[in-house]
Image 1: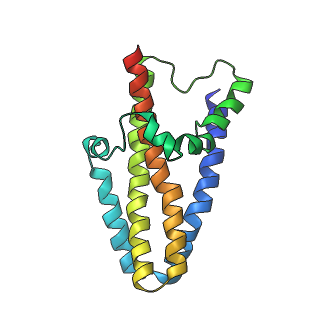
Image 2: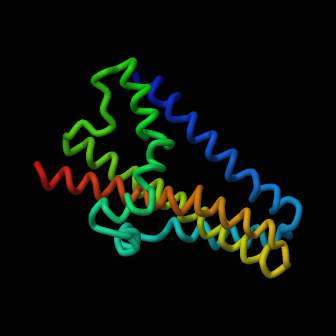
Length: 175
C-alpha cells in the first residue's frame, strides 16, 4: 500500500513542480548571472535554519476559517495527500487514512508540515529575489510570471501546511 500511496502522491508533486519550476529555471538560465544565482540560492538556503517558532509566528490564523476564505481548502483538493488523491487511494484501500489518530501518526504529519513549509519558504525567498531582479532589470512580463508562480507554488503550499497544523491541533483538542 505504501508504494501505491507514494506513486499517487508523486503525480501532483511532479505536475506542480514542472509547471512552476520551469519558468524560474528558464529565467535564471537566460537572464540571471551565475554569481547572482549563487548569492540568491545561498540567501534562500539560510531559511532552512529558521526554527519552528518562526513558522508558528507567521501562521495566518488559529482556525481553519481564514484559510478556507482564501481558498486553501480548495487548493488542498489538488495536492499530495489532498482530497482527490486520497479518494483514489481509498478506492483501492478503503481503510486508508493519512493520519491514523495515534500520537505517533500525528507527530509524523506535524513534522512533515514543517519540512514542507520550510521547503516552500526557501523557494518563496528564492522566487522573490529573482522576481525583484526581473523588476529592477525591466523584465516585467517575467516578473509577473514569477509573482504568479510564487503564489501558486510557494505561498499557497506554505498556507496549506499551516492549515493542516490547525486541523491537526483541532482534532487533538477534540480528543
